[in-house]
Length: 100
Image (cartoon, rainbow, N blue to C red; front, side, top):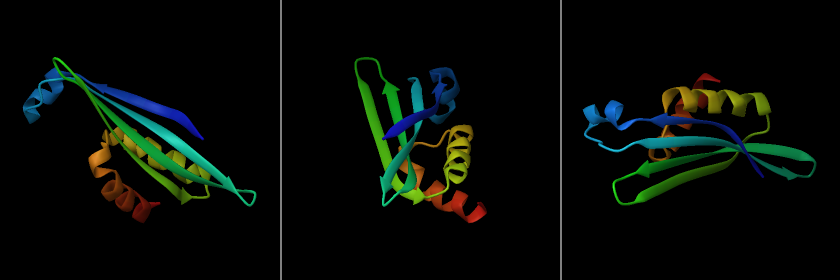
C-alpha cells in the first residue's frame, strides 16, 4: 500500500539555470508492507517531466526502510524540502539515515 505524502512543482524558469527548459513535478509517497503483524515503511519518488511534445515519468521505490513511521515521515519531509529526484534517491537516503 502507498499513500501520498506531498509534491513539488518546479517551473522551467527556475530550471533554466541548469539547462532544463521544461517544468518538472516531483511526488513523494510513503509505502507500507505488513508481515507478521509488523509494518515496514518505505518510499516512492516519482519525477514527471513535461517536455514540449511528450511527458517522461521516472520513479524509484525503496521498500522496508524502517519499522518506525516517524522516521519515514522525517525522510519524506527532507526529500520534499530538498526536491530529491529518483536518480539520487538511494544516495540521499543513506545520508539522511546517518543523521536520523
